[in-house]
Length: 491
Image (cartoon, rainbow, N blue to C red; front, side, top):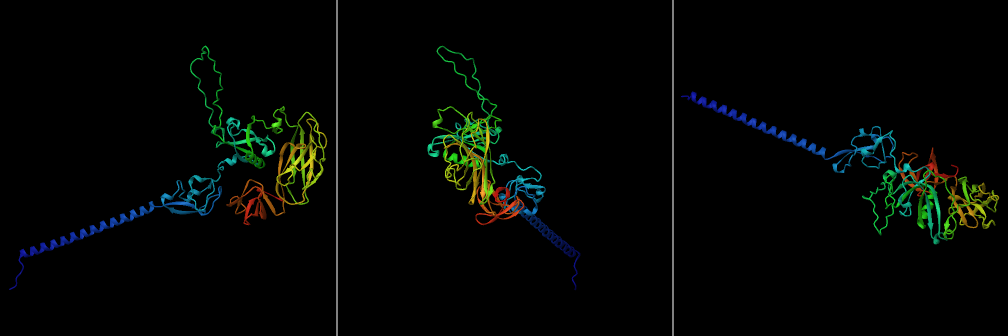
């Protein structure tokens, strides 16, 4: 007999199948939900990692090599580097798009980050610096002065001054003071380059109440009140920067080391230069007087000579006194041979006579070795031009020549007139004629600076490109220098 399922058993089996199906569906749903959560968490972790990476570095522009100022900027001059934020300079450029139409306001070194503040329009005027305020042909030289030794600190940038030198007996053989240079522009006072940068004189408030004189008392004397309209240098000022020629800078540096310097302020608009006799202890009780003679023009040429050539001298002198100036030989036009002096040629100075002279910087041991007479007594107010020659017999390094006027035997009334740098060098040699000449890697202002050569350095010329000369420096390396910075034979 076969047992057949009853309807009740069938219903129980169906319910069991349905329960199992629902359980399986629920388990699948839970599994799918768990998988979805894992996918979301993984995506969030990836996003957070990417954000962390992006926040841990910054892209900046870094120079591939030295880049000069005022050169058009292109993308190939820079590398784009990702750097940690704490190593990125403030204001660093981050995109090559910032380079369009721009130049550097100052040079950059290899590996340096580009700052947005150093970018300027290619057609913009160059940034003004202190060097732009220095007149051509002069140099900025700072000298130390005390307030009492410098017109009580009342000098301001833009003033013109004369500089006095005061020397002890052990320096010049006698205690003496002299005007070193005249009509010199003041470029700066301390760190101020314009009067507007100096403080104004303080105003003094008046004392309130009427002035009453009591019996037995004295009335106070009126005192000068500072004018608040005028700038004044601070009392602690110790330096004044002047615009002087290289030759004057040499003399002032020496005078500052061996004596005391003072400056005196000139009236506005007064440009004349007076010939003043140096003062010594023997003249303190004498009446003040101007020098009796003054050099008003000097020419020393040529500036490049070789052995056998002649240096020509022309000096124009004026009698500034009310008496004739007596003179002596040699007559104008006399030719000295290099190495000779007025003394060796039997022209020893006769006391009281006047002559013009030429001195050299270290080339001759005798002071003012080449001297010529005026060609005849010079009447009051009259002028005369004295010429002479010096025959070159041996090469010499760059040497300064200058003119002077002498009241024999030893009163040098005016000295240092017409300072001229003269060289006697082979054709392929040159001498640096500026304070410091930039030496570059190529014949262009855009080429990098590889060094500097000081005034008077002798170099060999090995090539030329337009206005640039290829030179062999003292260490035998080769580089380029602007032709205007040197003195060379035949150039």
